[in-house]
Image (cartoon, rainbow, N blue to C red):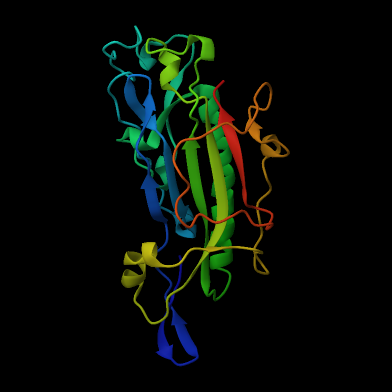
Length: 271
């Protein structure tokens, strides 16, 4: 349970204990990506994820349900088949902000076509973030804390499509999928409000200042970086180079990376 400083005599605050208040905040998506003759797939999505996402019952699923051309319908003037008909790759409607964290699955503004390999690699990154959120939660319940700790998570789609540049045109199905997605994560803290009820705190979580974390407090135990992510800027590492242009601007106030042992980023390439 996340707790807030809510009332009491001066210099003697009491702490609430029994309801979630900080799960997902500042969620935003960009416009659909412009791909050949269609606006299709997410350009960017971002959210601040809080420690209460680890509490039982706080993670949902938001399974992908968005459809239309060229996912499961033919695009007029476009490819001769839809993604669901492609026999070369097992295509998945990949969330930029995971549905378990509250990212929607009913709009292409949070979904992109990902190959099975790319989706599995993104899941590896998401697993690392889940472990970090567990660390945030364990720190939260370990004593009286004046701030919540969480993560600002942002994913941007590449400008370049997955199709070979020499074969990119309106009829190439892979021209409607990004070549890669770029994932950035930043540890953030939010100072807990004083003398407010839990309901008020939860209703105003989007309005509280989000602060970078130059260093974690004593007692905060960071998770280990997955071995496959260690020392690389791309997944999969073989044959891929990081640094291409991406769609969508970072959210206003997205913190610069701090030397705190956690902040970072990686690109997940289609494969």
